[in-house]
Amino acid sequence: MRSLNVKIASSSPPWGSRKPASDLVGLKNLGPTIIKRLGGVGISSRAELARVGAAPAYRLMASQTAPHRLAVCYYLYSLEGALQDRHWDDFSDEEKSQMRLATGLKL
Image 1 (spheres, rainbow, N blue to C red):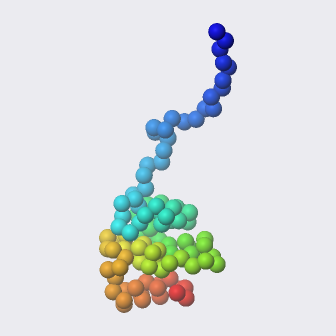
Image 2 (image 1 turned 135 degrees about the horizontal axis):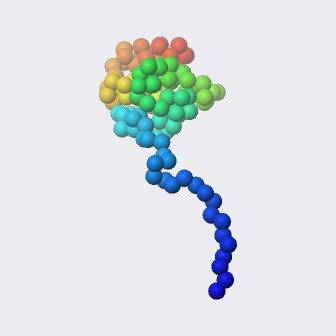
Image 3 (image 1 turned 30 degrees about the vertical axis):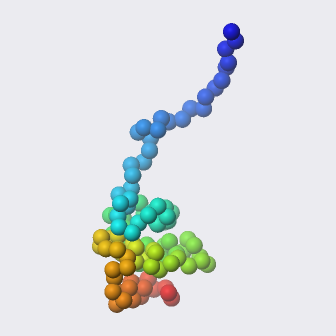
């Protein structure tokens, strides 16, 4: 019987090598797409999102997608809702207007 000399690429075992799940997972309104985009601008926790704020976080994400626009209701309102534990559509028209103004962008 001949033995095969196969070299298996070394890789870290799956246990203990993964980053802990972000605490953004499970926040109201935040699905995998928004969490991925937040990570793309350096926001990987609720505390970081709270420190930066919803409007600045939206601006950061929007700068990554220019010249395409990010949907205001899907991103801006969702970020603020995540911080307040509110559904994005529960904000009044006045609150939504204030959020849009806070971005400093023409929306």
